Amino acid sequence: MPHTALAPNPDDDLIEPRMLRLLDLLYRTRSVTQSAAALGQSQSTVSIWLGKLRRQLNDPLFVRTPSGMQPTPRADALIETARNALESLRLLTTCDVSFDPATAERTFRICMTDASHITLLPQLLAHVRTFAPCVRLVAARIDGNTAAALQSGEADLALGLVPWLDAGFYQQTLFPQDWVCLVNARHARIAQQLTLQRYCGEGHIGIVGGTGAQVLERALEEQQIHRNIMLELPGFLGLAAIVASTDLIATVPRHIGETLAAMTNLSVLACPVAIPPFTVKQHWHARFHHDPANRWLRGVCEILFQSRRIKHGEPKPGSEA
Image 1: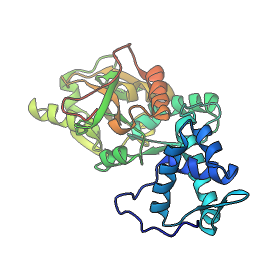
Image 2: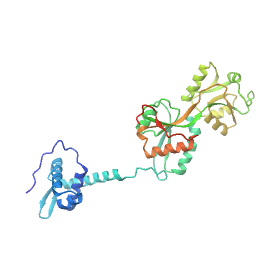
Image 3: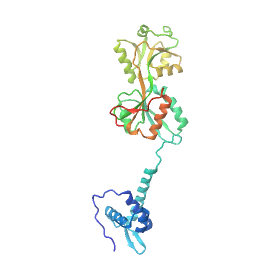
Image 4: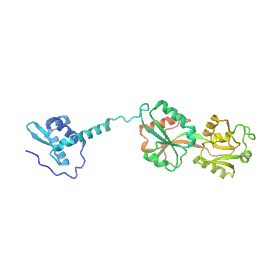
């Protein structure tokens, strides 16, 4: 006897994967008996499942004929969609989520200071080009949008001093930074040692951008030390050329100072002012803590830049790990 259309049950909105599998098997075999055997269920159980599926889709789906269970036009229309859904579910449970840098094609966006463009980026780029030739890097600024970019996945990592990243973020120390003075190697009034008196009497270049500059300015203010700023720069672009061609002093973190000195005819001298050191860290959001690609990128930065082995990054107190 032909089945009549049944009204859908509003409580049965979602189709279970086993129902999709039943639809596929019935369509292939045209047999409840064979479908039940393939599913490892009794015929009565499969009949109950088929009844539920008919209610959900508001159609008999299959009708008995002398040649077996024949699909209705509704079943014909749905079968490819059902099979695509089953394939998607299969991929979800079997796909390899590992990250192979040798074959991966993706872009990493890293928030960093312009100092890191000089000190860290060349080494990182050389490593990536050697071991991940199809990976592309984008250097982004560290600013007020950094936290949101890391949380959304727009950015993968932040390298530097980013003290405002708190709950929901992991961090890992890479290397410490103290402060040095960068001067022209031919500076007539400064030999191998820079005294506090000479420091206060010379002209200076002030770097006004970044959280490191705030640490420096706060220390100078607390010690009531005044610098004669002759030039202000928003970052480190052009700093080496200017110091090499003038008698001005630049007070900078050691890593950028030593890097610039190695590239130009500059001297690195101990800073006569007590300025608190800080640490350069890598930061990432808890959402991507277990992401294989993000883990690979963090591991590369750890290998390249970490000055001593420490415990792997942990979330700050209150973070959502």
